[in-house]
Length: 127
Ligand code: 5GP
Image 1 (cartoon, rainbow, N blue to C red):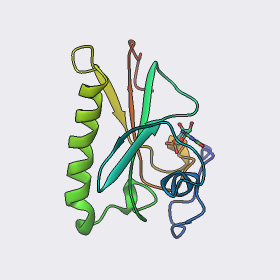
Image 2 (tube, protein in one colour):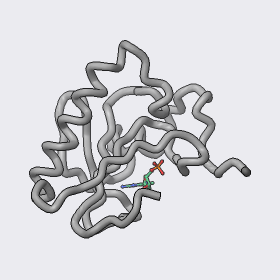
Image 3 (cartoon, rainbow, N blue to C red):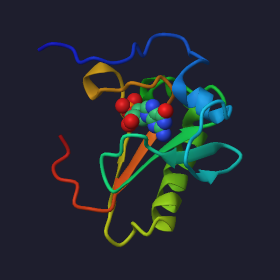
């Protein structure tokens, strides 16, 4: 089996990554949520009628593989915030999917931990 294309999750955090630049306001993001720990914005290449990306502020792990014990509280809060955003977008009744990509075979392209919120239509099989 060949490896997929994507980021090296072992690499150190790159402050020049596209999500870091959105966080700093250097490039625009269509924000739907902001709080002390997270921002969420619409994905530039939506894979569903609603496709929102939720990211921690600061320099989080580059991927889910980097979540250690110190990140556990934020990881739990990230799920709670994602559910609140989905509710605010009117997706709770119809349902939605939360996706965390990790590394090349998952197609992860941005090395800043992020959670995809997808909904607004039947999403089909997982993979
Ligand atoms: P990944 O594939 O790493 O899990 O997800 C990265 C996501 O970021 C992709 O769905 C991609 O469309 C989105 N993305 C990449 N560049 C930008 C950008 O400049 N603005 C926004 N809003 N989304 C972006």
